[in-house]
Image (cartoon, rainbow, N blue to C red; front, side):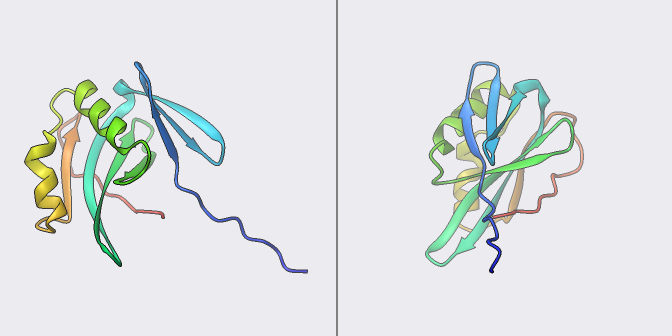
Length: 122
């Protein structure tokens, strides 16, 4: 009998007044705006071109990724820019990222420091 290996699914994001709800494998996690320590934009090359992603690092060191084209992409982008003071404006980094000029751009760092390291797990 063959064992079935469960595919690793990307998390689902929803935006609330107090922060994000990130659901992975049907388990929701509440992340307040104050718990977000870093946000980095990075690109992934796919067979049709480039997709822009965000790596969101939380206070406990966990990192989740939201990908351009995900259902919540626009809501998450707008909410991050509304609720994280000092985050880089989208127009200042998105075109460079989409054009492939930079691979990783740290767009928010609550503590000011080293760039976010990420391991994309898709």
